[in-house]
Length: 346
Image (cartoon, rainbow, N blue to C red; front, side):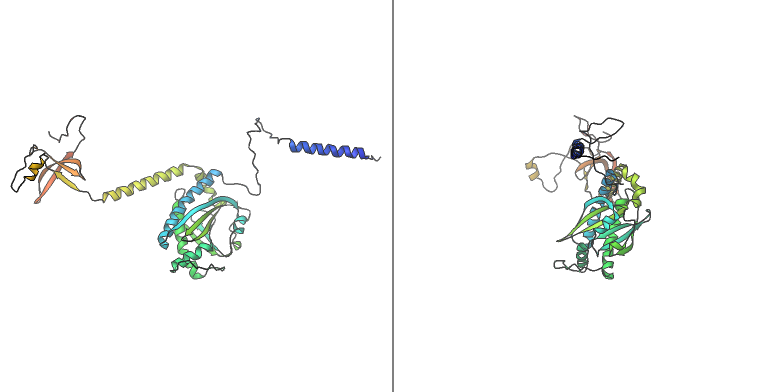
């Protein structure tokens, strides 16, 4: 048996489908949970399963803070090496897939593979030719004003020159990571075409820290690519914020030790105050050779040793190996309220 729909039945079915579509569009999304939630205060975010965020926001902030210290140290090292002001700062810190990272890099470029003794795998350090050739020009005595950026791989001499810059960058990177773990970074290979290097699968999640380098009127970028698999053993320490305070305490102790060392070598003026008295201006003008100035201080009273004008010690006046000497007998104690300062033994 065949059921034949007339035109009125077809119109009714189409109207029902349209009404149901309108209801679905205007109906709020349903959230199924064991506990009831207020839809007005609930925040719903889109999630891309093709790009899973394996690094938490706290860990990303820790990485960014860590590499901000690296940027400061690297900028200071480059400024001293090139004898000009070089500014290095963090431009971005994000996670993406390795294929997305390599697809956004220029070709040719300076693509360096870096390994560390305490980590499994390799990381990448890419430096843009826009800043590499001005640095090389500076090292060779140029001023970089009319510099032409060639679109070719670097020569052996240029690689050798830029290698000195990378060594200083790896030294600053090791210093920055020392707050988490002692790591010694070294370059294992250098390539000009990033598409030819596959240190991890294309869909592997990597953390990319982008830096901006400025030198005089030239500027360029530098990217540090760290695969998640490489730093996964250190994620717990990055999540724990205690290493920030530990690093701060360590820096404070180092600064204190340095201040103590510097102050221990500072010269000080030490004088002995034998006695004190008062006189008028007329008496001072009338002083002549052979006159005696009488004080109220007994000869047996200890002498006050002053350091940079401050009363510090009491001492007895004497002689040592033919020279006048002061033998310290005690510190100058602050007088109590309403009482004059008293030397020891009085």
